[in-house]
Every structure is written in C-alpha cells, then in structure tokens.
Image 1: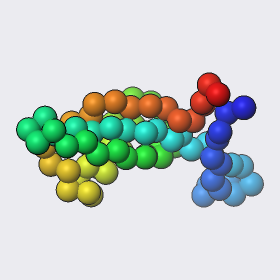
Image 2: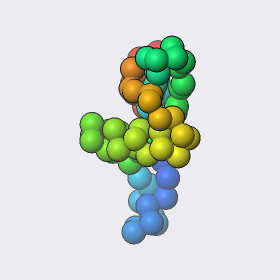
Image 3: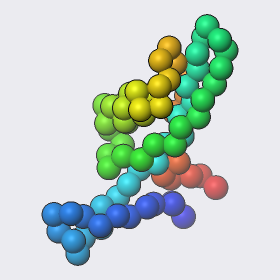
Length: 78
C-alpha cells in the first residue's frame, strides 16, 4: 500500500492535499562528501522537485554539492 502523506488544503480545508516525499543524495566531487536530504513537495513534477532540492541546498549551505540520486518514497514497492 502506498505511503502517502496528506495535509490540509489551505484553499479548501475539507479536501486533503497529497504530499510527495523524495530522498535525495548530494555529493561534493572535490571532497567526496555525501549528504542526504528528505524533501517534500506538493507535486512530483521534475521542476518542482529540483526547485525544492536547490532551495534546501541553499538553506543548508551545501555549496559545491550536486544531485547524485533521487528516490521517490511516495509509492514504495514493498
């Protein structure tokens, strides 16, 4: 069964909004360091996920890190 997080819709409080969760691995090729982020978006579109990844990188000060892998945790196969 898919693990879906539902949040309250601010426009129509009676209708839940689906939240997509992604596990993102960032790497710094210079230092070899890896960082993992769990991000949540209201859409699973590529541009929305990348926008949130970029935002989290800036907020956490991860300059020089690039996206290595992104896993969608919303619909797990097990």
